[in-house]
Length: 423
Ligand code: ATP
Image 1: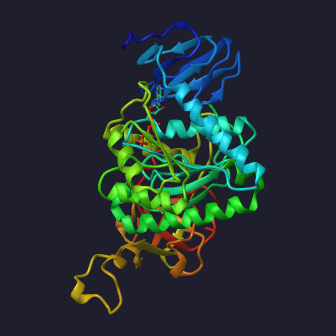
Image 2: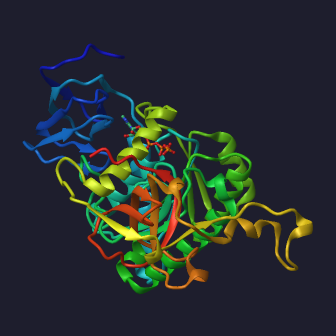
Image 3: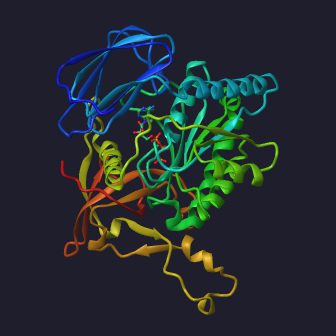
């Protein structure tokens, strides 16, 4: 299917229920897409006819049409082809079923569907979340998007779980608008780095999301779409069950993995509908290094914005004495050394205050909303800063921050994630 690279302008005519898939790999290249005639969409967002969209390195795109269209593509793509078989009709039926549940919920002023997407990595979970949210919002709904994928999440930077109220379709080239997200800092790229903490945060997020559903009638009927990470075996499976329970999900969509589907049917109560969905042949597998690059890119965008929407972060010094830097999780103690009443798991949620040191360099720090140390773990965060210099002699940290001095709070929580500010 791999085609020769093209710098020139190419026209593609698609019949109904087909999609044009392409990838932009090379660092320096950009690809421009224009809809010449017909109707088409990118992951559920309609394309405006005649408008040119720009895609940069790393983009993996599918332009789908329900009724046929003509597209123009300009620039060098690494792969570009028209796919005649897509699972879009099945995904659209899922949307139809969710919409039916929303209509029923609306009638009785009840909660709409809480749906969760699960499956191994690279099966299109994030993409289907986006499609379902876009279809919902295009029908006038206001669903909540919850992202539990701490590695490649879409709500904030990596190492977090969070929720976002979806009020308009995702921008074709930039995803959902990140206004006022609710974000909890986990501080690791994979949930198994601290399963205890992950579960606490999921429960906390679920409680807050359910409170939000209570206060907003439109959102209540619209429901929630939850994206998860691709860890589905052993402890990862238990975590999926835990997340399903915490959010009281009504529907679980299992992508691609029959084993997981059967396990969930076996282990979940009957009132939870478990649906098996095929993965799209277009989903691109990402190597470890591409995933790591994508994480870097997310953090860079957090501070510097995107090509279309540049941001100008601030760099300033803070004295060691002005901040309290904490880490969640202390080294494990043998059972015999534990204080009376303390469980072996408790050390994973212990807040440890650190003396600022050179090891903080390039690390992301979450700015907690909490005023009290005992509430730091379950408190959501105001934002993130990155340590760009540690001057032990002068007792000063230099930080990169989206906002100017002063920091909204002096309690900062260390994340395992790092970012090299090469701007
Ligand atoms: P993970 O669990 O690792 O985050 P995932 O299951 O959520 O992965 P996605 O992020 O949805 O998978 O998809 C992986 C990549 O494939 C993305 O870059 C996405 O843009 C691309 N992709 C998804 N569907 C298609 C398609 N139909 N055609 C072309 N590319 C696609």
